[in-house]
Image (cartoon, rainbow, N blue to C red; front, side, top):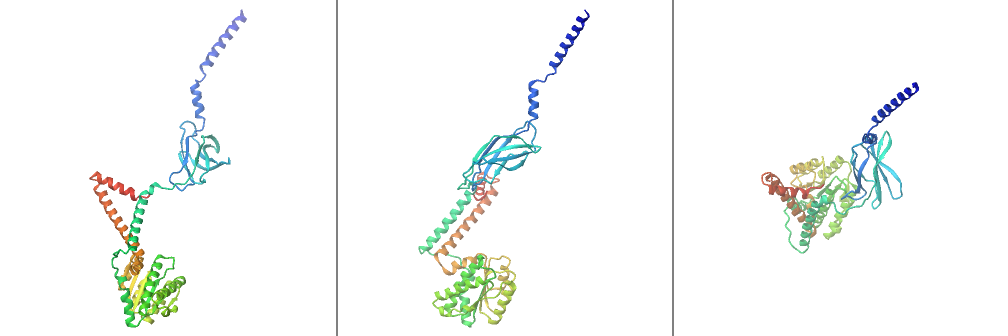
Length: 401
């Protein structure tokens, strides 16, 4: 009887323990959530595509991140090529949602995937995405500029063709260039030489090139009038080019025998040494006409004042804004800015050069009108919506993205 009582008590205790054990088991949903929270978040919806409107060599990657799980320390962008070689191309901070791979070859298919790092180890990886890079012919962000440049080219070609057909193209008179013949004539009457200074820059400067072109026209005039032409230079290459240009001018004038190579000489590359050398020539030779055309810096006023002191008629020109006031103050005629570059067309009256110059002027006028219309449309557009649309159109037309 005693044994039976012990057995009954043991059975009751076992039954109660089993019930308690069953009541403490976690629901399946709770277990699943706990497992997800212990898993590292990974990249999802990875997309790889050729970067649009570029010169090739680039693949764009975009993706999203899982919101559940442990936040990774960083992300690694993995790539494999057709040979199967897998490389880590970069690591990105958590939260980055895009990347541009600019180390690919055009026409080759690459496979990408993103891995999640935690504690220096790869804990998760995304699905793979493939892409092939290629170059595009047209960048649509510059369509407006393409239209404007095409319009400018069409205008220039039209005037060039018109000039070839004999149509007279009007070019505004430039006083400094119109006085070239008078200046050379004055030197001839006085029996004094003409001094031509092509600036202190080398032949890789556009102002020096423009000056050398004008030198050829001046050389032709001095050859026709039988006047001596002196050309001191500060660069050896400029001296060589000037010698050939002056020689060609004398040949065109039918006076090759009058050409004197020694009149075109090299002085020095030093800025103020060159200015001193040119001033010395002015004092000794006392030229009746002086041309200061090209690139000038601080020596501009020194040269112009010395030329003025010897009583020479001076024609100056430069595209250096800081030096133009000195030439205006000390010289008889001054070519301002782009007038220097228009001189070759103005003096030669060559149809191709005149047509190009006329076309550029027409294009400038078009852009000036475009700017005025755009400003008015943007101003009045705040009160009248149709003009606001016009302003937006013009803005898109000239904007380069």
